[in-house]
Length: 152
Image (cartoon, rainbow, N blue to C red):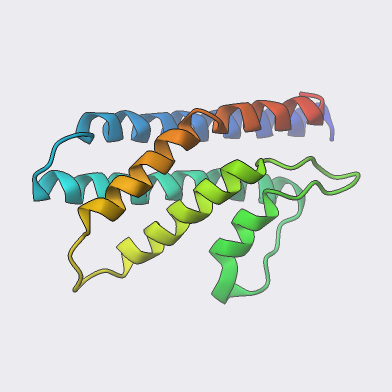
């Protein structure tokens, strides 16, 4: 990868990290409050968190391998691809642990997006919240390893 393209990738990744961190900050402010309005707000932020991670995955995919043909499974496939190391092209972005946590967050985002007639289960939101907090402690290391292995 040439220096200019690598610098652009590095900058785009940094922008997405900043967005992810802003959402984590909003999540922290809502954590521990038990009322329904806060629960819904927290669920919305968890939804946004996955969307911000997915934007990061698109940055990486667009820089290297581009197309995901199957529209129906796009979100699942994009996430799965981030665990691949593609010989001669790029290293994996995500560890297996990050993948599992993000897949759970992806499933929650999908549920939340389509949950017009359902009430949120505080226990399920708490479980996703715990997994998201665990993810916060490891995702940056994944990104740093990815960039380092690109020669950044």
